[in-house]
Every structure is written in C-alpha cells, then in structure tokens.
Amino acid sequence: MLVRTAHRRPPQTILDADAAERLAEMHNFEELNSIDEDYHKLVAAIISIKDSCRKKKPNHIIPRITEETRQLLEKRRNLKRTTHSHLEMTLLNRMCRERVAKDHEAFMRKRLMEAAESRTSNKLTGRSIAEYRQVIPCLKDSEGRKVTSRLGMEAAIKEYYERLFHSPMTTAPSRLLTQRFEDTLPFTPSEVRHAGELMPSGKCSGEDKLVAENVRACVHPLYVALAKRFTRYVEESRVPTAWKTSNTVLSHKKGDKEDLGNYRPISLLLVLYNVFTRCLLARIRRTLEEAQPVE
Image (cartoon, rainbow, N blue to C red):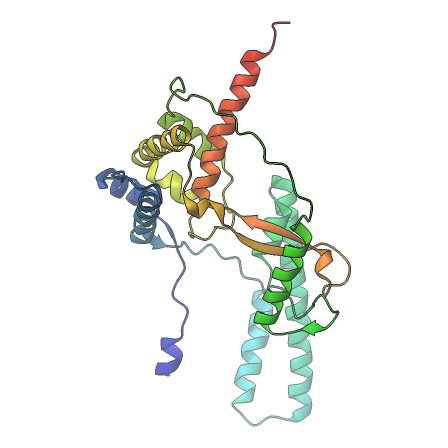
C-alpha cells in the first residue's frame, strides 16, 4: 500500500496568472554583461516564477462512461468477491466490454462534434481525448537493418538527417554586409507584449520547458527586460548560444513507419527565440509597407 501511494501521480496543476504577475513585479530582471549567462539567468527566473505559481486544476472532466456502464462494472467487481458461476461471469465480462467500447466511441464523437461546432482545432481535441500515444517501435538504419533499441534508433535518426542535410558542394565565402545600428530604434515593451500575445497557446515547449503562457503571465516586468535584451542582440549582432539548438520530434506522414523517409522533422524552438523573431518580423513588415509607393 505504501509503495502504491509513493508512486501515485501527483494532482494536475495549472499556472496561476495573477500570482505570477505579482511575483514578476517583485523580481529584478537584472542584465549581465555576458549574453549567455544573462540569458540562462533570465530563463531560470521565469522557470522559478512558473514553478512557484501553481494552483490545483479545476475538475471539469466529463466521464467517458455512462452511469449504467458504471453500475455494470460495480456489479462485476462485487461478483468477483462472491461465489459465482463461470457462465454468469463470462456473460457479464462480455457485456462490460461492449458497453465500455460503445461509451468511449460516443464520448469521442461528442467531443469532436463540439470542437467542429465551436471551430476549435480538431487535432488538439483528438490529442486531448486520446487514450494512448503511439510510439515508434523500430526503424531501419542505412543498411536496411531493423533497430529496436532507443539508442540505436537515435543513432539511425542522427545519421539519416546528417546525410540528408549535408551538402558536398563548397560555396564561395560570401561578403558580409555590415550596417550601422546607431539609428536603429530600441524595442519597446509594447512590441514584445504584442508579439507574445500573437503566439498561440497550447503548443509544445522547447528545451527550456517554457511556453507562451509563461511569458504572458509575467506581463510588463518581463516585457521591459526582454525589450532591453532584444535591442542589445540587434546592436551587437549576437544571440544566445542556446538559440542555435532545438529539440526535434518526428511526425509520421504516410507509408511504412519503419522508413525514416516517411517522417517529417518538427523543430521545437525556444519560446523567447520565437518572441524575438516575431518582433523582428513585425518591424520588417512595417518597413516594407512604408517603402511601398502611394497608389
């Protein structure tokens, strides 16, 4: 009993946005001289705020099975504890399996219909009601041999994409165009806030385990700190080293699941990197629009 209690999954929690805002206002996002050290300290501060401001997730779970099916399962549970005939137990087991499968199918159909009527993402809805996640059982390496171990599959994936993206052609060294950034206007907190609000919710996190909701929860104090750092990155033409790496997940498209050519790699970039690129994109769009001739 104690072992079962120790391995019990903790209750689900969600981010308390109000508490995160109050804690962010008390935090001093001091800037360091080293870009990498400053970035790691900033990410650690956001993670600390995120972990400190958790609240219990409200229980709005819709039962997947009906009350009649629940009573059948309870009847079977009580029947196992008493003397019963084998035939009666077999019939009850079959009835329970059929009713549970029917209730699960009706539950999934109802949720998908609600998502379609409310015009929300059917993909996210299907992912939230899925009973299990599919894993890659095995892959074929470059020699056509099946690899089942996790380390072996990782090595096969690395070899495949290194060979795919490696170019044997040598390119002539390009001439770097230098530009003065003295006249570049610094980023403002409102630009960072607008970029953060445009980022979609419910997306997977990168290596830092941060999502867009964590950035939006820290509100103005974090926007001010990010605006200063984004301006510095542009002026010095340097970005944190952590932005040059990303986690990659494989999404199966069609065909043989053992063939790596049938997978599409998806890079999970860091959330602060995405905010920075959105700020740059907004300025580029504004510059291009201002350069258009008046019609």
